[in-house]
Length: 56
Image (cartoon, rainbow, N blue to C red; front, side, top):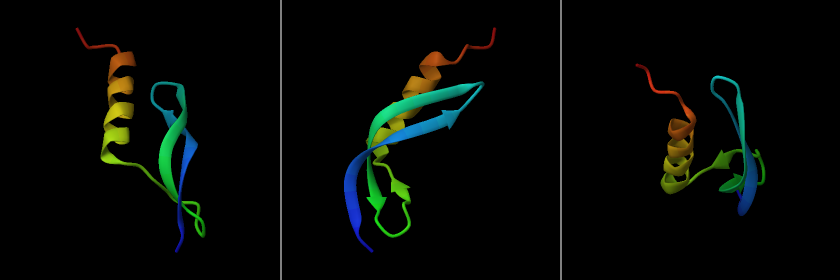
């Protein structure tokens, strides 16, 4: 199984659609499965939390 370091378009649906482009990932050449580093996942989660309204 070969893995390529690249950038992908990451799409997440949460109360509408968010498109986060140029996210670094490792992608399997055979399956196309994307793997993200823990730092990348944490950054994406921080962006989502920042855009979410807080309950009163």
